[in-house]
Image 1 (cartoon, rainbow, N blue to C red):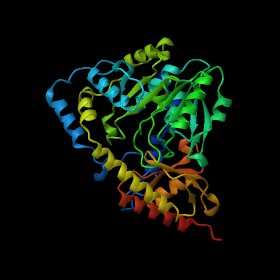
Image 2: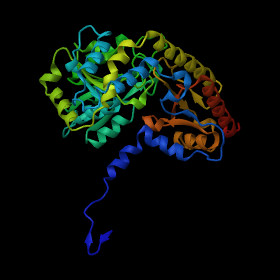
Image 3: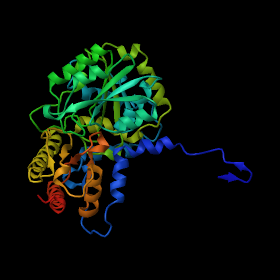
Length: 418
């Protein structure tokens, strides 16, 4: 394209389109575009973890009132410090300290625009020429997208379905070399619904220490557990290995649109400070956007005043929904469930293509399911597991039943005649 006799001096950064295509949002946009607009039935959203639209998942009034109070106070109309408001950082530190054998200080806490920005900051800080990072497969594809954008090599270790999606630690050791900077652990698990035991997390910490790498602990689904295994934060093992803890109020309080999270140095030995990582985090925040100031102002009230009754109610709804999902899946021959979910909002199921006619792979399955039944399910390819599916059960239980019944009808329509 020319401007008279002169060419324009700009062009698009094509790598951004490539990176965004492999994110959950990118795949959801493709599925959304494939819905049949003439189908008058309600779309069943079994593809992403945002149940906030359903009345049974309404956040606590404590959170609503905290935001209203913060706005009406007129104390939070200003720019916040790039690391976050001190009272909010202190509240997050105190909140995390409830589960730790040592004490975090507000200086260990950096507030971010949701957990997404915490991932961005972490990857940006660790990226250097020749470095690599170890990511779980299946996992959360935003890590791959940000690593690619920052020219940080991503290497993948498998999670083992038969062992409750535990980390294959032998694979971690085989993948790591002198240029490995960190490994990512997502617990409770997205996309698997797993919850790791104290013993397994300790082995992860010991392996990371042996390899001389940090652990990035993605705990955005922290405490959303409803099985036999309790949630154990990776920060418990901070005395063994330096941990960067990533979290937010998005999932536990069911307010993903409020966009506030945290990046925390769970490192009582001060290794991250000595290595310059802490200063790099501050430097990155200096050139980044901040979470909304009035939401930061509401954080102390939200964290301090929310009662256990609210959290128990949410976990009980998730338990009921997970049980429905588990039982209904048993009646759909084209999918099998390696491990019943114990936490988060998801379950991974294996797609048995041999039982289906005219379905090429998991993406083809999900595109046709969206078009024919107005049910959106995430193809496993989006999270690193081809011919698997990630199903979200964090919706109104009655809507979940409808969605899974439509999934069964889709199977029956496409079942291979024996």
